[in-house]
Length: 130
Length: 389
Image (cartoon, rainbow over all chains, first blue to last red; front, side, top):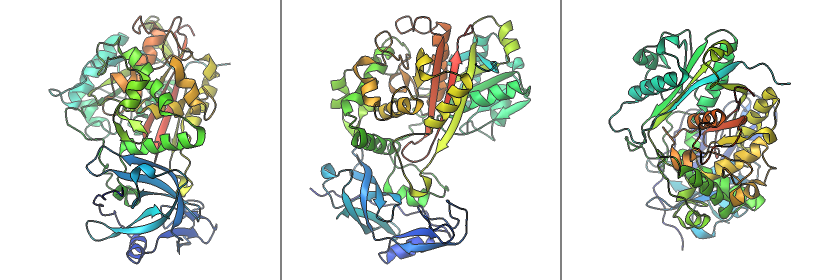
């Protein structure tokens, strides 16, 4: 049985992250890369956490990944799956797994990004079984 | 060879309350100070150093020092969540060794139960840079620890029954503690059959919520000598933090790997030397992963190590949390390392409950974790020795 979905709160958005959330509204999941050291990072910063260069740039992720770990939150009105998803590009992000049987989620499962509206009309990347 | 002892723990006090509806937090701090100082045989006017965490009301430690009436030469309010107090033990030892103070009071107080604080819902951070990328996904305390447990099960085959043994051991100890919130002895079946909170953690994999707090009095070697032989030596201490590392996430260990190594090196001792261990137990998984981090067993072997009563005093090889720990006894202010130090001191003084006292307890460890090991957290380890160790 697919889960009912809870309401998503608005993300805390600032001048470093506005592009990420604008792109999400267009169905794009962005991560940050660094032109100086060539490494990706998440969550996105203006300053690279690998080398402290300010020469960072946005890149669009494929949106495909695998579940590194997860938990089903049961003690709440609408149970939901929280998970760390490792993107194909190699960074791992916190997210939710949706459109799934909450009892059928597994570590290592392949997932793909989808977007959900938040209370205030922002767009939040979550994942569903691919 | 061990280094000379920088400082001693001369007094400890655990507040007997578990629900403080009629007390303010400053009042609890003052009651704790009185209790720990009486235990040490010292007075308020002997105190010249004060250590508290970020939950002490007011600006740093200043308002609490004013309320208690302390005249100070030294304060430190380092905040690393529930591991803060073992961080403070290390900082106080160094401050005493440097001559910055000679009698240090470390205090923790809170009343989450009386205030009805929820720990199950999404936490509100307000401000930190990661918040935008986490809060909408509903991270709570329990489901972030649960994700650590889930990964451990996946990588190492750890089972719910193995985790349950940790609660079983804590309950065997708590039955002897008249102040414990949960005194009933439970079985592995009781734990795995209790309601699922956040897979794979059941209700009985979780610690209690309680009010109150604890305090420590640390003193210089000269003062310790003048107070008789109840003081306990601080032989080594280490602290470290861990976070999500720019997206290179590995939840199979905590910063206890580093804090433990530093503490053991300073003490010139190993896990095998420990007669007793106080391990922060916010959840059963916290204990299992910490035992691996500190080197009591190999990575991935924690499940096997904790099984079959191995943590039960008088039965197992490593008696742990003989007061019942956070899992059964007390978890004041949702922060666990203060009570961990207090029970380790009781063991080294031979003042634990007779049913759980480790015979000839000479060397002990106390470890604290703060924040959430599924996201970002602080770890602190202290190695303590009996007065004649």
